Image (cartoon, rainbow, N blue to C red):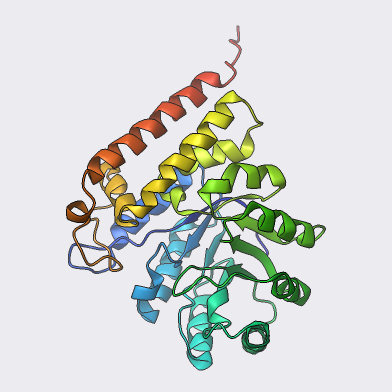
Length: 315
């Protein structure tokens, strides 16, 4: 891609009003929060954005808004790739490309919607590459919805050999797979960015250039420190905390993350389209879980600040 996408890549939330409309004022505050908290790039209109529940007009509008408000301070990539039919995919990807992001991210399960195998994947990929501008920077995303379509080694190689892709959000959640893919991409400008908090630290050590999981909506600055710091006792303790904190995803994400941001003053509402139930009623003690995550994050921030070398006083 013209602008390198690596480091902490935030998977952006979509704020909604209590009435369910996109809340652009909250979205602007959210962009500033990401940029102030160690994020290196923004991934707009992804699964955390509830892209499957956004109209095409909303997806394109959100992408344009993020690009416009970011003002070049960080690379922005966007997906919005949700349709079944090839013609609809071409329409939506063209609309997303026109939003002006630094890269357009294709969802692997849309390249093979019926999960038919490598032949179908190759056919779907070829049709989209032919339809999209040859100079359009592309990425890949093993989005878990509507089903998780992991790439085989053969399919990964097919994508590398096109020389059209320069980044991928890896959702294998398997360190051996990450290491194998890193080896396959060695020597290229392809960035394989792990999305699993469970293997974030060892994946970074193995060479994955960053992190792009849902926890970028809770404490991206802690992942940024982990990525940029050498291994130490504090580094290992933080890595363990982040794995434990990431288990909270099972308790009503993305509403859980929106509760955090409502407390921070970033978002006005915790409304989600993907969730049609009361998260506090279903997940007892949800607020206590949020309390613990936020308190633990602050405690590690304080420890990191205390561990920084003190600047020498000048006369």
